Image (cartoon, rainbow, N blue to C red; front, side):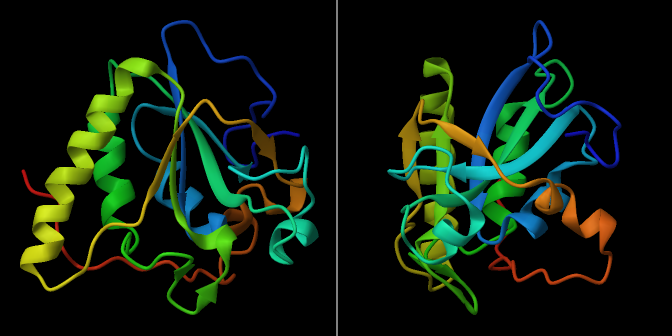
Length: 184
């Protein structure tokens, strides 16, 4: 599979010095669009993570048979964009307090989800959650329900899902944030 916008093979090894993070914030089509053009983001792909089945299909995920979240995998250059910068976009692009849903999209696949792939990133992730939680509470939101896991397997989604909103500019995007800016 080739990235529709960047013309890079999605199965490429991570470039030397780059890092990766896996994020879920609802329907992966809209979430991927939030990240693919950011300076320092080398490559994005959409897939499934956090469930019980190996290499699940979209149908198995949507039927709730796999317990996977719809996620995006991001390869990025930490000398250009930091993990904190990526997490700001993540927290602001969805409502992390909704549990197993985002807006009208309901099911385990739409849950807020972070898969930490580098042990040194776990503190940054947890600190950002605490910072964003304080802003949400001040604005009347409940507790963040984001699932934070470490080193779970990522299964790339079918080709037609990759960069879906670039291929289908008027396609469905159900993500929406809380309008609470991440604290500076």
